[in-house]
Image (cartoon, rainbow, N blue to C red; front, side, top):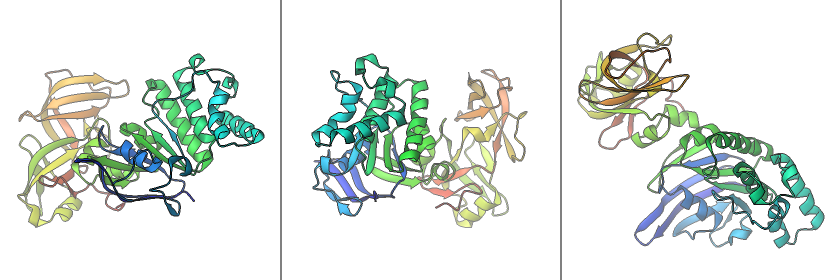
Length: 377
């Protein structure tokens, strides 16, 4: 059983707080990704779990025991770092076997584990090579293999793909996902790359300044962000935000920023109620919910907003269009590649009025969420 539980964990260095009162449960065999910007505390949380940092308050559980005072070598974890940290004078086989030799594992058991891990990772033919004879992707597989042979209860990954180029990153990302399925072990993975998080995780925990903002499935965080920070962090390009006011009546309610005015669907009107009319809010619309008027997907209830094209970026299968409203509010749309738009063009962009996220301006917490995303709390 490899359940991991952070119980009111705080890590501080004097007045500097790395992790602030973190309570988070990771069930056995889950793939959890800790995500957030640089300095948010995600690596610190991982290092506390590994025993590389001593916690200031709280308890960390692995399985049914508190491991606060347990040395790292006895926590039954294996860690893969951003740096491969391979011994340059050793072969791949010896790098993978080194930790087992220190634990006085029998030679035949070492042989079995190394060969099995090499087969899983497709590096059997590399076992006699030294690190300098391999590519970055191959070295990262060796680092993974060194962790696999330990047969730990929990795997910890601290931004392991950061040193790889884009193509290798995608390839290795898929390999780690397959590895989790094959091993059936608890994986805790740290990254600042939300695309990695969305594609790999069973659940994502979003951290900001050491504080847990929200934890849920990738799709739920995308559809139902609990606050402005999560809404802006999950999704690429990021959600567009506008400062505005709720206006109108219960029969016809709008959010209005001056340059963008959108009538709200009935389900969001019901969430807001009459008491929020006149309230200052932040409302958000994702770039993929803004369309060129000639290429609106079927079923979209559009609302046309006048804007001027500022910059376009052709991505092949889509175009990122940066636009300005008449009030100089900037926003991004992801549009059909057939759309012919040039800087300076005046255009009426079609906003999907049923995909508006509304947050309180003072607290930045979610007030109303689009239809179909309310249930997964």
